Image 1 (cartoon, rainbow, N blue to C red):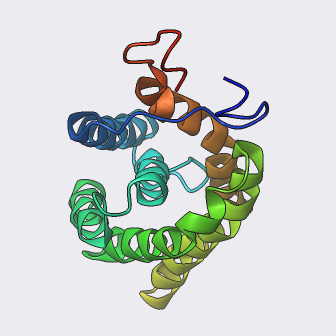
Image 2: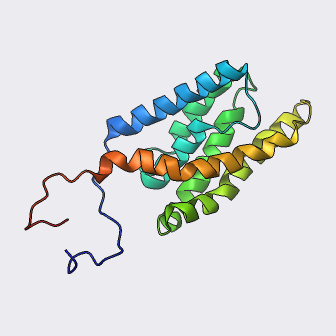
Length: 179
């Protein structure tokens, strides 16, 4: 195995199943719904699981999950939270665009470094959401708003581990095919 894959290199991944991709996005949407129901509406400091999952799949599968999917799920979140129609759609679309733009660069790094690289993307998305709130006359949220992008970045390694687990399976390992 050392001749084909030198020590210290990452394991080759199996292709991502489209069913698993869509199931993970739907599960993240449901997690956002539960989070909103539990806390009685959107709370500024809570991480957005759907945004995190969309960014993950935009980075790992940019041809399957793009800005159109992000826009669609953003509209669903807007209707669910009864916010300005298009607010989450705009934020998710911008976040997806930025993630697709940097996806080749981010994949070169280890997971913790990826989280640091993605922090500005999450901050930018929350700043767009904040500016829309302020533009349409909502009150200034508390300083807790700054926690959401940090929490989303801190959740990146866990999300990466969890969402890449099905791709780490070895289909048919044997002595003649070490990959």
